[in-house]
Length: 472
Picture 1 (tube, rainbow, N blue to C red):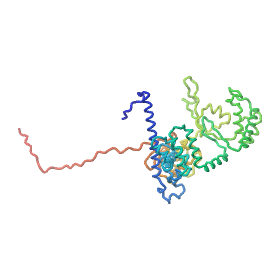
Picture 2 (cartoon, rainbow, N blue to C red; picture 1 turned 180 degrees about the vertical axis):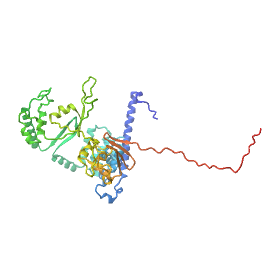
Picture 3 (cartoon, one colour; picture 1 turned 90 degrees about the vertical axis):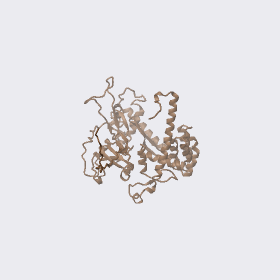
Picture 4 (cartoon, rainbow, N blue to C red; picture 1 turned 120 degrees about the vertical axis):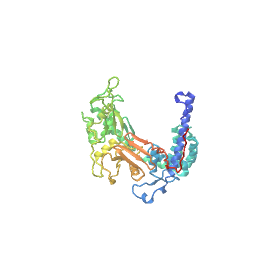
């Protein structure tokens, strides 16, 4: 039992000392994790793979996790290591790659990490940024940044220092990267969605941007001239109100997706929602009332605003759905899929209704610590169909291509004792439970209880007699 005093009993100086000790323990743990990642990586070299099996489709391959001068590693090793430390397969691979680079390409940084002078996060960042460099170029960057990696610089300044040194180490590569960025053209959604809002960024030559801006501005002005005043507590000139020009520009961008609809935007009395292109958003609502038709209320008796979930975007309130989304879309209410009433099929192909049920039941990759929530993931038969596994809800699981290969060709086992509940076990008997709430590591079975040794007794009749005289 720990003899340390309870935190509530500490004075200020003791609190600071205890906090500093915790920070030191974190640094030591980070160093040890890198050491273990390195040992795990070099313990899974290419030689462990069967040359005959490696040429078959989907089988495990050897990959260059680290940079120039580091050995190749079997690719499924990252999934096992990542799961063991409670992280994704990608995080396991990143840690193994950084450990290889630090030990074999960045010796100065590694020595300072071991001495607890540099945080592991700073060293891993340098390893990530120098991986495309040659071993000699990486060593030069190592010498330039190792002294400043001890936290004397704020993170933003240190990251800028590393970026500059990497460019100086390989100016030709830096120039090629600049040219690629200069030529890069894209139109894509960026960042993560927050509170039901997202961003779309277009990078193109200036004439294209100017033409797009002019078209959006003109269409927004037409909408403002023909649409009725918005029903809102805010006026049309309120920067935050729905009648503001910027708000109409958002409508205009959506209308540009359909030229015919954009042409009708100037007609008086046309409802903007009837002009919007057809899109599908899956919104999950939960009737959390205390009785049929009832709503939860607060202490003052006011109805609580319930929370909905937009697939791929996150949680929003019902007020947001009505007040914001309602101005851009019409709603089609579809019945909830009964997950328990999905008839199995006698075929390998998975029906669309089964896929939809699996997406509702398991919204993310069902591999331990899986993070992908894409609707285009593969739907895998937990018990393979080729071995008699049925095509029914309760025998499906969404997996990325990489994790599907790990499950099929790696030393992993998975069972689905109940629909949407996945039990995974790796080759080292580590067991993980995955459900819609995430991943939990199950404690390994303890050693069997000690058994009492069996004794052998020989019962025999003696060949002698002891006479006892009880006479007084």
